[in-house]
Image 1 (spheres, one colour):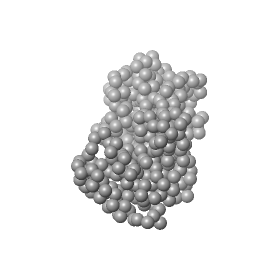
Image 2 (cartoon, one colour):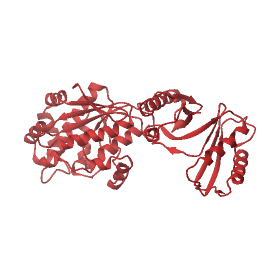
Image 3 (tube, one colour):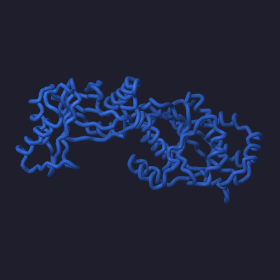
Length: 400
């Protein structure tokens, strides 16, 4: 008999003339998701303002979790797909309600009719189907607000869809439709959440991690690989660059005043990420900065970092409280990885009194006297490079 899943698209009303490109990108991601998590036995096509996926057998359970990680998906539901005839509706509703593992206490029927020539309007369909449900399932009561069971009927020109279970996706924009970012990852809570938020806005991201070996153990690199594996599942394809940076931090420490040390680490990390962006044609950088969360993230320090970057730096967490960030980390399952203890070279090199209100003149003089472009190029050329698949599989590949 087979099964069908109907995928509802998010923010479609914003697309205007770009709808076809929007759909093309989303369908490509949905197809690849089903191919990896379900197998080749399915068809995927645009159905009005939705995406219809069908299979001859049954969908694997993993596909529901995987669809929740596809940017641009508002919601999706398992559906009976029927010819456009009124008499087909109730038998399908009855079959779906009868198949529920646990019978709820109350229900509501909601009908959406985009096919305006259908002989009954949405209110008539909902009322008549609801009356028949009440007759055949006497334990159920009608409830219009917050029902335990929502019976959804969608009537289009091509098909009628009937469903009783709805799942919500991450929403936002389809992957790859808004640009390419270089995202700076660390082992903490913030940068993975920042990456997730930019995935939600349709960005393709390449990850970069500055590895302070030999001043830190390999535990922190293992954390980054695990985080990248998880974050890579929100994309169709991902690369991670693990850049050796310990010797660079040692060199920077000897070239500056102690109180500027951490801030200058950040400056040169941003510059190195910018070099990678140029090589990969990325358009901007992304960090997990939150205003005034630590000394390097004061308004004055952020402004200096921005002045040193040739690219825009996106900071989606800038106005977040830590509790808000941790709430999202729990939601996307990065919390348990981020909370694992690890060595932090920035803390190891951190001055006793880091600068909070920087001296712009000192900063400008430093920039004129020091040029580490060659050294940063060398760091990047010695980076370890990893591919992360849509399923989160991590594979080491050739260096840049």
